[in-house]
Image 1 (tube, rainbow, N blue to C red):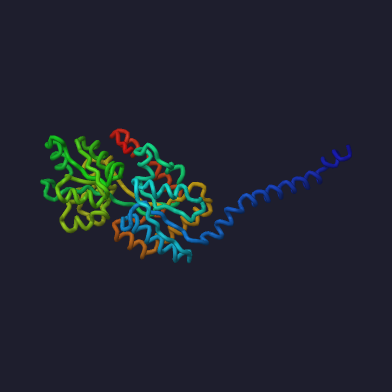
Image 2: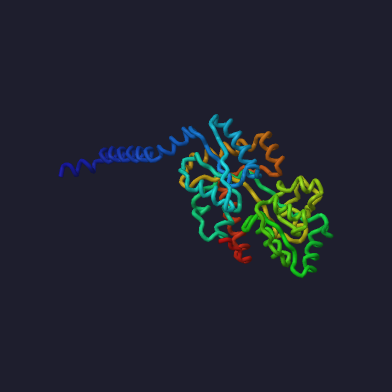
Length: 339
């Protein structure tokens, strides 16, 4: 009875409360210790940036610019590892199954994150669940390219020309489910024209088909076609972005051509395996965004035809969610399947 009375004494209750608070703080510190330690020691070994495209591709160039500067920023080795194949599934699948410690990152593009889940029946991973956004690195303008020998100077003339052809227009892409493929389907739906898709094995082979006259047109990233346009081998009919491009300020947008809902914009961004400590994600995000503010880096990226982005992990995630909804609808309407 005496013990019960003592425990109800105010001073005893205060002492007991203090012990509970100290215990709770200790438990929280213990739980957070791995994340704190990870942030303090990261990076302490080689960081790999996996690129799911071949060496020399536009994504590869961006990754190597980042790797060089991250190496200098962290005073720690950062390397690029190319794992092309299956429209990006092989490379990003390797990232998704890597240890979630920040030492294996991926340079993601729209096709693998927001398109492939709708196109491939049996993917070994779920991009939006098994990979987490770190930061958007670049944005990429897409252009509508045609053979310069076609009697076409405007988008309106292209639509009219298509309606005169029995089988409609043919258009190239870098492959089934590629963003250029979806841009073509989006354009056809918005313009009310019939178009036949001729997939290839990359942007350059597809553009070569347009130049040879094997196909009529193609949607492709501007960086892939700048040289061909400047040499007169391709005609840039319009850009599929929200505003005109600084590279070709006289070329109108599809919005100006009365197709306001035919916008196609690409991007690259850093992703990490799900489960990577938030403190490590924050460190990588901050490091990359600081690097993207460097004038030398901006100039190098701009010279490849990209615009520098640099966003928060949250906003990059929102961009991918919006793209997933948009392209999912296009894919369903067009009935696109790969396997």
